[in-house]
Length: 69
Image (cartoon, rainbow, N blue to C red; front, side, top):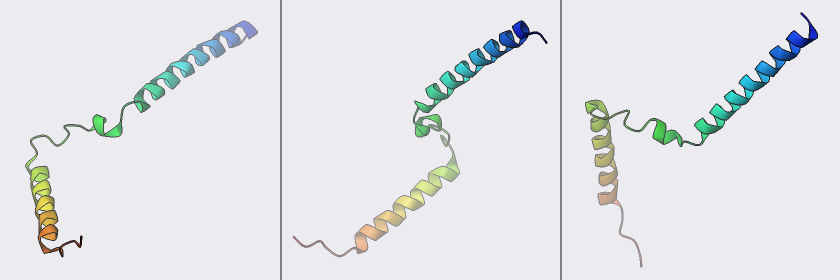
């Protein structure tokens, strides 16, 4: 392989690496929760888990002693 061929391949690799870096930076700008938003839409198991969690938190509130002023 000649020097010109190696340089051409190296230039192509540099371009590809810069494209990949740009994609990574763009992907990191989106918060993680936006990428999973709607994943559990219309899922009865998820709805039940949320109901049970809410029930549990409400049960803790009703048994907590009153706060002092």
